[in-house]
Length: 404
Image (tube, rainbow, N blue to C red; front, side, top):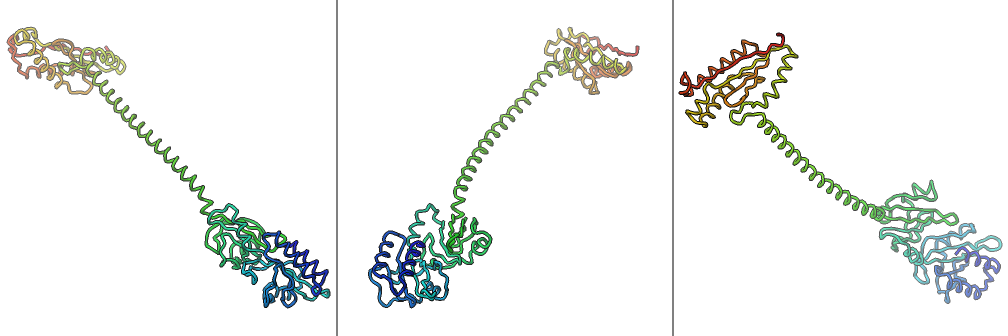
């Protein structure tokens, strides 16, 4: 449009407004409008706003453009430059147009009229519809005073309104002719990421905005997928952890059961099954350790060897079952007579018993042996093969003294 106006203005200045070659200019204007799709029309008005030349085949009668803002501006301003004006509705076609105008002067510099080229707003609507923008995105062309010339999405009521109070015009443009800002639009209140630029040669500002919703959509989608993957990993890890924990608990229970079983087995291996006393094997393991401890600490070690009197006769008279019951009863009497935790009562073999008494001197050992003998007599188990008529025991007493 700039180029067309410059060329047309040169012809007007050469011919003069009062000597225009109307037919020639009309033909030229018509050719130019035909080859430039965004061009709506070309016009020359005299100083009173009367149509002198246009690309239209017929000049409407009774139409005068002296009331248009661009005409009033050029009539009152001597600025010879090209002016881009706010959108108006064409009086010849009714289309929304953007007037691009220039003052025409007489040779003496006085106002002679206006040269006008009009751009179709619809051209910008169609042009910007080809850009890939989200449904809530926007593209805006505005004058530097904020007046909207074209906008996508197109809404006729928005054309001609002002963006002067928008954040870009109040806070950003005064400091930088281009930039990016996340703001809420004053037109439709949609939050967008805008990039803007004020053009160098023309009084225009272009804005392109993508909605925050569209910008974050892919992020939300990726975040949802990431959350799903993380949730799956956590669930898998949790399942593995639960399974592992169950296995550990099962293994712990199994180990505990094995330990208990081992202890029980060890106890069985060291215990006489008939009497519940320690067996000869346990005595063989404990006795050397107690002797060493007695030597190391210089303390006595007492031992009592016990035998049930005439036990063979008892078995012959009463039978082996009764013999086993007799041995059990004597063993219980021995256990009851041994008070200390460190003392050890042992079934040495058959009807023979042993009591090991760590830290016990001669008198103490003798007293324990006497207490056991009395406990057996107090059982009053009949024994016709014994001189007393009851079961008795014989006890041998010995005390190991490391100092002697």
